[in-house]
Image 1 (cartoon, rainbow, N blue to C red):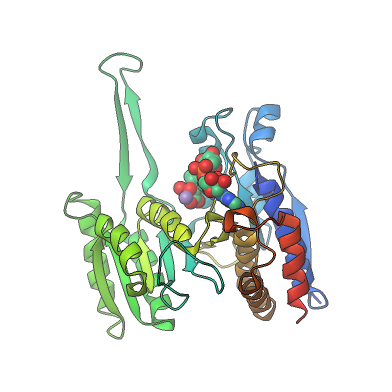
Image 2: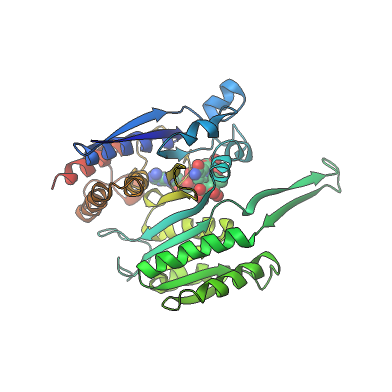
Length: 353
Ligand code: NAD
Ligand code: IPM
Ligand code: MN
């Protein structure tokens, strides 16, 4: 029996609802094959209210010893400012563990009527590779003349050749294993330093992948094209902020933000990677037991796949597809009346078939 140590950080809001649901599905999927030893970390906004910080000072150090991290969401607006929450937990974890890419599949699942008329699952099947440790989220900046009428705030994006290259290379490798098409998201018409470097790196790395066709799209045009012709996208590589925005758009094309998963992958072997749904803490529906757990369950399947439990991961994906195809046990975001737990129960039942 294989044994894995998983750090679980449900966080805030619906994170506390979808992560336990996901854990139950993962347990059922690996039963008899592997043992998942969960270590629960109560970090997030409640922890902040009790201790003054979102996680302990050695929080990231504690995470290093695990095989993977299963993360819900953080954010408790308006009680805790969002930049305090996110810069106190998720963003330092991504940076300090060097979780260099964020892999975000966008797929229209069978049976789901997405918002795009006439588009079916074959038309919406792409994977975003999001730069995950620098770019617009570098955290470089400051404020001067604070509180005065001439206050100035600087937020400086940072693009390093080393980092852009490894993210772009990851995207090319993935494209090679799929439909061999890569779209690079840029804005080098307006941003003439970082985005020009980005474009140059894409062009250079492309020479190593002559079998992959590359399209470079300005981010504004890419947003429109994702809606108009999503079938044009296979693998998409983008900067931290651009891919953040476009993956919420992608999740909307899937039919709900509650469906989209993500994998934050560590650059170094032996470091834990972090798996989370794309969505946030959803304060507008938190506490009612109606959050869609599919994004969290799917992120958990990506975690199992990453840990080498590929067969269990594939069975979860098939069960999710059967559930959406059936269309009878869906949460309210998909037009149903089921609870978070009922969806998890149905996925577990469908694992057996
Ligand atoms: P959100 O993703 O939490 O919610 C946006 C909309 O999607 C809401 O209407 C919500 O009800 C719906 N939604 C989200 N998840 C759902 C689910 N599982 N099932 C059904 N509906 C779902 O985004 P927001 O409202 O902009 O942000 C809320 C808080 O979450 C903020 O504090 C934000 O900073 C934080 N946030 C955290 C993460 C993270 O921890 N990874 C990600 C995004 C946002
Ligand atoms: C996400 C989230 C985070 C991000 C926020 C909460 C900092 O929106 O994971 O997509 O932008 O990375
Ligand atoms: Mn986001």
